[in-house]
Image (cartoon, rainbow, N blue to C red; front, side, top):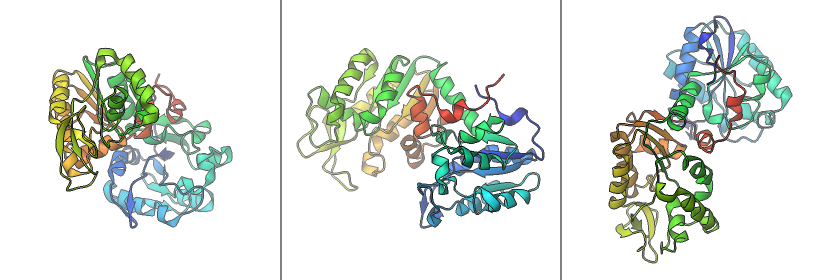
Length: 390
């Protein structure tokens, strides 16, 4: 496990904190502040300890140049409201503007630097840019688990110049993954959904030796159906991943549990007529858009006595109300299982919020792609550079 900053005396220290404040924006306003709320624990704690808290983040893909629409200034304003005290804003993350803003700080102050990706050196992990960022702080805290699969200057480069520790959100994410994957209470049941086999193949190969059952849903299941010779109508299928699906099924043996029926529609649009069909009886022109009721019952039976549940990916097009019931019902079954439940992946976290399931799971990861890579057994560079717990 990685060392937390909590054992340090940080009063008066300049603490450079990497957070993931990459929030969705619409017309210059924040449409979802979930990631800001996730960062509050570390930022509030550091402020209460008397540190001068200097926050780095990216927003969007400005491709190494300033883009006014991707400024973090609105984030500073919202963050201040959430923290309950003003958050200062520096119009650049390095140079005179950043240095002057840091000089003005007092103990307990929080400062947000401008988007680090306004400089090409961040994504390039340029050592000179990393050194400029590091010069702003005395200690580095990485609280951005969601960005830790990226070897960027603001994530890994600064760690070469400063004592480097994990933030509270980082620790919570790592502990949740460790508890679910390395020391699970049995039986361990995983649910993997989403659209494509190709993006989840690594997760499936990593999980299968560890789990007692792996429930497969979402459009990716269609590729398994076609690989087995079933007719899936107009459903989304990855023809280039048919061999991968066959290999996973061979590897899974009796652990792999596939849907047996599906909700079908003619188009992925609200207001469509829907029918329930067996997965080998989808008519021409119809497509699978959600898990059917028999599949939900089958999944719920496997979840009923689970000691640990890992859920990554919705089992239907939950964004369309008519196609959301399968994902909602599976979520209800996970919550009712009584086991330790880890919900991971951006789409799954979004589904939990959209379907009113928030607060019913042991841990909902905000890690997105980083959670996915961790579930593939990969080492995350932003985690690897942090000090180990002694």
